[in-house]
Length: 300
Image: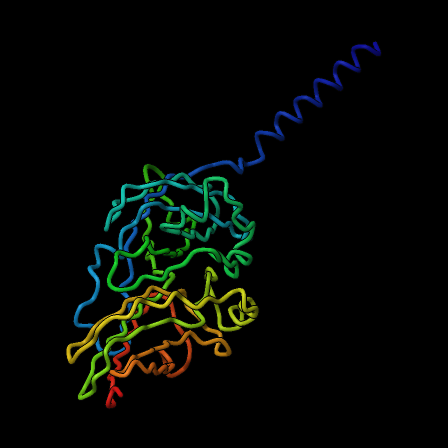
């Protein structure tokens, strides 16, 4: 009799557990998402340079990271795919977790600083103020082809956007994390033999989604800035000579990124001047800055 009661109790318990498992919804449901990726145009500050670099060397996308943060701001899925460098990316398909609301963050061209096992921040709050690429220089001069430019964008995926069948399509706009600088120099009635241009206080990395406060709080140490190598002396005449740079944004007004120009006179005397890039002292990502400098003087 006791044995029968024990068997009966165990049977009821197993039945209860089985029913309980059926009633608990799965948290591993996935959804196939097709990302329609596009690139935001650069904002232009100042007169557009007469000889801008070919967009084909500054727009290619070579790899894509997709991060999914759930309604609690927790990282719940990630995907990394390398691409054949291309100016346009057809629909990029990934498998994500099904959540009521998700923030989808997409990076392009960060494969050299974020490998497949890269420890992305566990929360969206930490990601937004994360600093990356301290050891990567963007210094590009003389119109040479730049390295692939880092890009980032985000969008929100909600339950009502998820298709009941097939693939869910969402749009993501990518913005370049760096800014572009063109320095045009020419002489007007002067006789300087050559010119050297140097960038001072360039930031060595970037914050994923910066604010002025977060940038100032993070980039407080001199080790976060660098003076880019000075160009070789170049001759300059009445026609403008352009120097091109790709720089990380810099919102720290106490350590503004500036232009240093050194010219050599006919007698070999060197003169150096330092110029701001913007009137407000900040460099903002995805912006094309144009600075026009006119050399005046006897050159003696």
